Image (cartoon, rainbow, N blue to C red):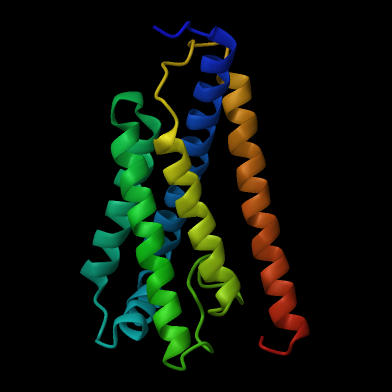
Length: 183
């Protein structure tokens, strides 16, 4: 049998937890956007799906995103949360790609709330693919229980770096759209 390497196991635990915490932040943020601006998301969901959106659909989507965020924070359900996060991110990315392909790239993506100027773009589709890839990476890593206190700062650091990179990419995409006159 292979020898246990506590250092490598700790690094794996920090990476898995950090990525899960980042995705929990992302899904909690998405849920809050929806629950704070139901009318905006009702109209937006209607545009995405080509039918009239409804307030119950927005509340349901916000609730499901909240559940995914909670699952990602619970060690014994984290893997389920990672699977659901990857599936949602791929689904959202596919919806954006379809809208772009069928000529609706001028619509807001809804990714960052009703006040965000972000419009659908291939860069946002790529961002969703990268985030889904991070969820799948965390799933692929061998699950190792993290030492309760020892690895928390490292996990927090991974989550903070990922969230900062996400927000940085969002700002870059928004600025690029503004400079290209798409805003």
